[in-house]
Length: 457
Image 1 (tube, rainbow, N blue to C red):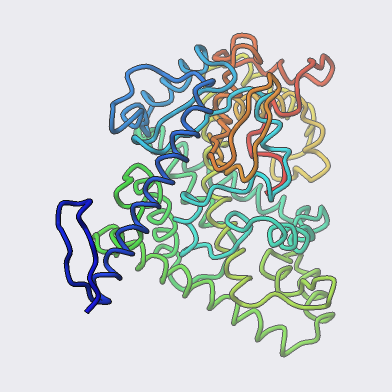
Image 2: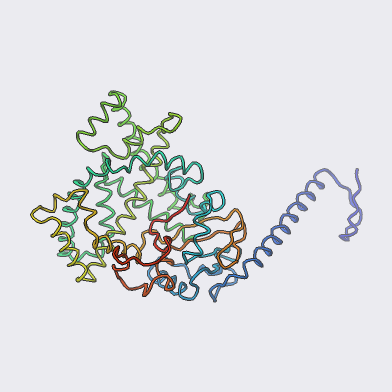
């Protein structure tokens, strides 16, 4: 048998077997990998030392204690923006550095970089994948571009215009419901009510709409809850928990519902010619999102699969209800807090309608409400529906001041931070619709106002 001298370990000569050699080789490989990781981490740590970071970081948890999903957390983020108006380093645990960018000039190199250089950071988006598949929100690069081209027709003005009547009907329902809420003193439930209302009028035929609505709201809540529990980032552990099982159950319910709608629409299309189906929809003026997806073809004449259609439908139900509810709720809140602006909006609408009833508002009227538009934009600035987006740098990215974001690091583009940055906006905490006055444009970067993100994905 082979003799192996381990005198350098004080063990003398010992008989070896292939298993001993395999064990020694495995241990050596692990040791080399560990040393390489330590060297890489230290090198990256040294390169990141040029970026300031908040004090009081825990030796192991880093700045995780500062991350809170409540008003206190938002106020803290605002204060950090005052101390660090462009970029600062944030440690999510002892070994995970994140750069938080809060100035238009500093987010530009990341947001405007090609998708291959600064793709989406997939930790959070990965939580969405079991639900949303490879929809527009989760996909990246060329796949995102391909799907974006296919989806563009769904938002053509000719398709959206007929839905103004639906909007008017929905606003009437909302107004009646808000009157009840005011009488009952339930205004704290406004955002939740908005979510349910928007989902209820989505236009998707549902055998049990209450279950579908409840499932979407539950999925949204579970995802945000998981985001603040790093130990559950591992899928295996998460799906062992009660929340993980609830997530799977809600996913199945949403998928089954969407699949049923798609099958029903496909049967309708197969029983009629495409032209007949489109003409029938055009007469009723209800050509909707799923209809457009079923009829969509790429440059090679290929249709979307049922799985791809389901992913996009689920994506827009998720992305549409929450952001719209947030935008409406905060706009109503700010107008209520500033009755002088509310009254001006009311007078603008009355002058536009003259002798018409509110139910008669048409598509072209929406462009004739400049002050209301200013109020909506200012609400979106103060309270953006999406407060941040994340990117992973696959190459070194040079910032305007010469500092470099090293390859392999993740960045958070803080939309909330940009919108509340005092070096970008004067008195950023004040609600002032005149910031967006088209007759008095202010010289600002196009990236100073990005309530729904920007750049390639």
